[in-house]
Length: 419
Image (tube, rainbow, N blue to C red):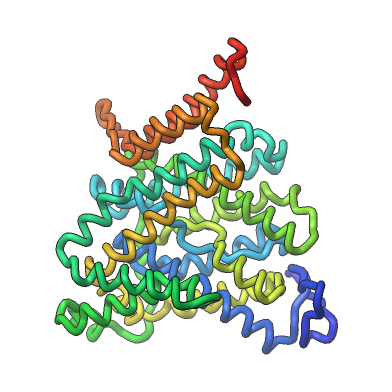
């Protein structure tokens, strides 16, 4: 069982100092920081199951369990909240259409196991091979495809209730430009709240399920089923989770002044384990949350004890079926408005990876791999062979990863490479 030493007098963090993962403040302050982490993760964590049709309280339960597992597996060295990963939305929607929620859960389990195996490899040999396999041009392309592939899903939700969608999206825009700090970070959640209220005024909310739900009860658990044609849809997500976890570890290392390179493998293993456990019980796949990195940067408190409190708090919140019924009653127009912003943001994150890493698009290899992969992924070019179907995200990922390596190898052999 880990222990946490008291930072200074436990009441304040002096300028230039941070509360390290193995430290804590006084109990009231630590509990308060834990509550802030719950607030920071809550909107994004419940948004994924709402968009995919998963039970929100079940996802909340496994996000709390996953966070506790992460602290244990990383040996109390990396502070992180594991919330719902947006990268799972597209494959979950696709798998659910073809085989129901159980098959989507099978894909989540497969992604978790694969990520855990990658973590084992990184723990043994280091993470250098990941950078060679997935340079920024490839990673950025995959992230962009995963977001923009969902444009059709957003349209399908907007069309039945365009007015509700417009109010939701308009509220998100206004919150972003009128606020700063925490409110700006939860703009999508506030947009959903206003859109929900607008829909309620119009009589578009069915409250029967909310009224019938109990205040306290255990979340619904669902057993996964496994079909290869569905599981293969989740392979691209693993690549995104790898990038997110490594980025998280590097960010924490920078902010705390610690060398965490040797812990990257354990971080991947922890997220893989958390995702596997979530899939086995009916929850969404997990990832380390940037929202909570922002909270740590603002407070300068990196104590893992605060995350244990946040994880336990999430588990307690998941024990309210009425909360789950309320979240499940969000109308499609609200989902469409929020999705238009969220899915587009995921796509733009891919472009951000290109920009921050100064990807050279005058290099034909970079240019053509990104261009062709985007078109295949966004238009959802699908290939079926027998019982197996490979959707646009899978095909775009294969082209980006394999095509890049082939083109780069040929260019280097011919002396035409600009890398």
